[in-house]
Amino acid sequence: MNKLLSFDLRADFGMLKKPDTNEPVYLTFNMLHKPALLGILGAIAGMKGFMKNGELPKYYEKLNHVKLSFMPLNDDTEKKYHENGNFSKTIIKYNNSTGMASEETGGNLMVSEQTLIAPAFRCFVLLDTEIEEQKILYDNILSYKSEYVPYLGKNEHSLWWENARELAYSDFKPEGDFIINSLFVKEEAVKDGKARPRFIPGKRKDLNNLPFMYFENLPHLYLGAPLFQYDYKAFAYTNHELREDYSPTESFQLLSTEKYVIQLF
Image (cartoon, rainbow, N blue to C red; front, top):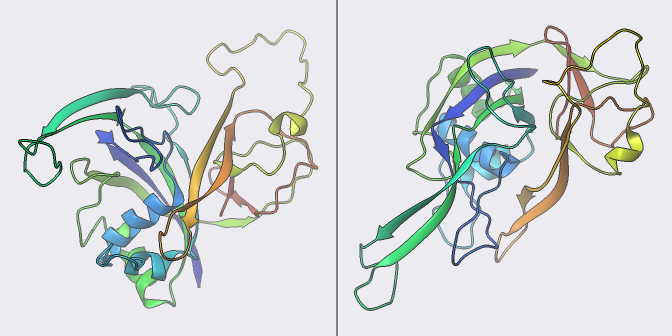
């Protein structure tokens, strides 16, 4: 039986390293991506990670077909988590003096890393509880139990989750202009799918909720052997209303309680 869970991930720091960057600064993806979230779910369920060169980790083999979604956590009255989808970042410099990270004299590697500050995401995971591994994951998420310590990109950046709950959902078919609350796969230009702004006489513009669009190419899955590099898709996140006929191939779901529309991919 398919069940949709929602939970909020938080970390003090995060570093989702872009594999195509090296010197002088390692860069991070701004947004959580599917392979990273699958790794977090694998840790929660107690599945093994990368163990051997040239082999995909067990968690990915077991969970890569799981449908999921996520979005930056909405601001609350006490904290602003992001700016139109962009998280604050800083550069952290440190030395790796173990002697195993550099072949230079002295074996000291000086590293500069771009790091996310206080990233927070609302995640949605569609689990089939008739499959043993997914049933364990379902139970662990709701009971706030993790077999391994989950982290956001690096061991140093541990995370936890809260507000875990099961949600009622249904397929969403637009019957007019609509907003997608989660990230979604951008298969056509979002600007071409924007609904025409509606003018309401006497209504003042909310300067705290101005329209925005956020785009990022994010890993979607691992390619095959021998390198197992990321495969990318273009993702978008926006508060613009979209036209009824803006319809990417990935399905939309309506969450009954929150009245959110999300895309599971």
